[in-house]
Length: 163
Image (cartoon, rainbow, N blue to C red; front, side):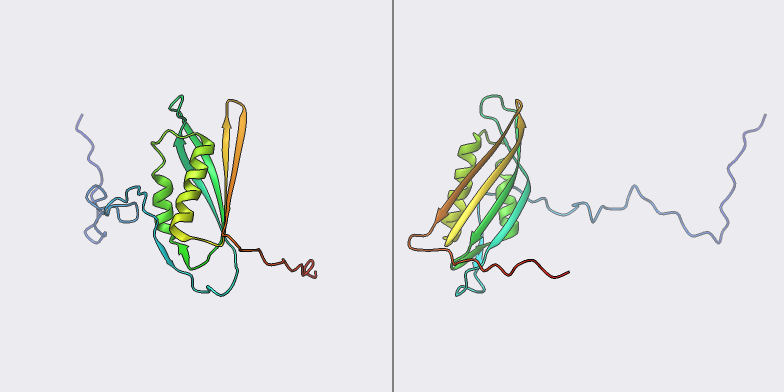
């Protein structure tokens, strides 16, 4: 019995794309970013005003120094800048730099706060690290820094918005 041939494409049909040869543009075909301990800053655009900057960093990882198993955490950074603010991409690469380092939760939280304070010299900074469950225990470490002589302004309560 003769082999059945697939139907021929009409001559007017558009050419089929060659997916195997197409480079991936949106999926990081360019140079790879690497983790870095360098924290970059930029000048505070409103140094005469106390205002809070809050960031949530949900993909923090480091290694347990005893077992070598990964520890996962969400970092919450809050600060009142003075002359400098931390640049976000450098913060992302800095956070990535802990992925292969064995650190106790308490040690890594304080190390990150110390590095951020050294880079930005804020009026106030708080870092809260919420580690995911390990051995049936959730750990939250909170560390803060206050510039000598700085006092937080009194918060104004404007009440609930009208409905």
